[in-house]
Length: 102
Image: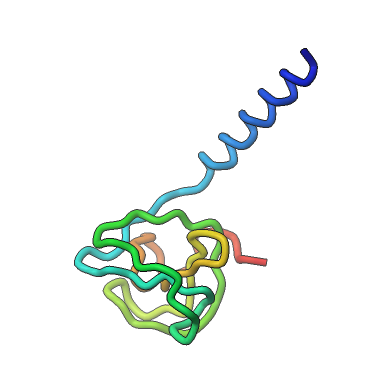
């Protein structure tokens, strides 16, 4: 019974942590390159479809990019080792909206 309660607690904790991550719209009409690091010189690991929503787990400074939402050096971490330029993500802010990546 104790193991069952511990498992239930872990599941609730994981669900709560996932719920804390906010999803944002990407710029309409663009298929975004997802990079392995915070700059266009990093490898493209996948391409997002037009109109994709992305989570932002953390953000870090990198190469400055100009896009539909302005010019920014902020890169959004959307998955483990995957980044998109914040200039293509509608966060409603010119600054950081998530913790900085460590």
